[in-house]
Image 1 (cartoon, rainbow over the protein chains, first blue to last red):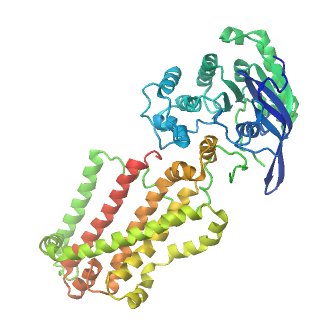
Image 2: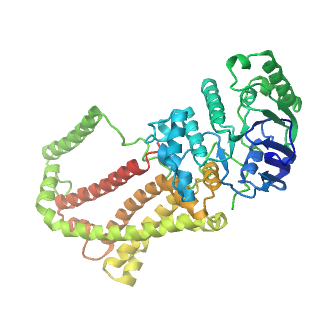
Image 3: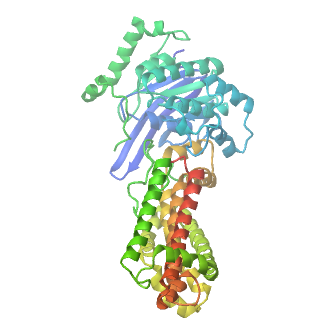
Length: 276
Length: 281
């Protein structure tokens, strides 16, 4: 399970660097950042606010070009949006003028493909959204919206699912429910998942491996293997090992930026804009 | 791939604070939305009190009709003279609809194009503002000089009045770029054209409707004004004619027709907005 060679990696980030040119000068978001995601693995990326997590994920998705380095999917460089890569964005990102069915149809309209209705119905059943097809996003709760977004992303049967702080805006109970749902879906589909989060608990619950990014410019500070078997029950999550692991990860993040320790202590999980 | 290198930004749609905030009113939000029966009754009661009160006051104080005709006289004139006014209503509608169609089409296309080029937009913005703020009625004498007393100068004036209104509001709508939604479309490999039709345009629709409504009302205003300047037909012409002949009940009958037209325009766009843009509430 240890970070293998690039041959076996499903998704490989190689010496990724990203510099934004802004009005007030250059901003290095990523610098020499490398990591591997194994086939059917779940890797969470955590790190202090503004450390380039989202930049890294957008680069993996091909939405962003890198300034240096490269992203490889199954060994081939990713240069743009890729059909095998699905994305779940922050705050569901449904189109408010479309009902749920039309939102899930959206990717197929763009691609001029016929939606696989059987599969979509299966997914909707899976996430408990059967019969909500005619509802508009504003009529759904935050959790339901995010579940719809997951269905939309999985409808195209991607082999890699990138999730960008998908549950950051949800309350804790809904978040735990969504985490169990992601686990179930993963047990079902074995889709490779890269998961960005601010919640260490969420990261440990979901992942094979938790990657801690350093403060800007983001690079891999440390990787933690999460050895617990799945499905991970509440009992497992309450064990001493999980507690110790949580503290170790927290120390890794906080240690890198002592001045912000207070913010972590107060439980701030809200990442502001990539402020410059 | 333009804009692909922007720093990802999620929690706000860009371009809302820095608008030329002339018309950023949320007509479709609440306003004249759902009202209870009691509220409707109260509105009718106010009308009854005002109209009834005016009727009584004008009769009690023997106000002559050429100063202010009683509501009953106006209603009677509206009833008896309506067949005489009807052709003029038709002329005004022709001017309004054709001028508005031309103006709003040009305005929409220009808004869609100009917002794709932020640099060009910055250059053009002051001139657009000039077009919006200049009362196009001022050009009517010139237009009449050039095009005569027919439909043309009026249609042109209506188009000039409605177009910039539509454009400035539609541009506000098109500028409401939501990076995350565009990224979503791009992640599925959407082309620029697909992004326009499937993301930008629907997102702009509420503001487009606001622009169309304001444009139509400005168009009505300009059509009537242009008719008052010259040419022997149209509701504006009726206003000048009736007032010069001191036929005040008929004059007010025309005013009532004009307010009804205005209200109908509002209701029309309100209903369209409710049907197609109610997602933004």
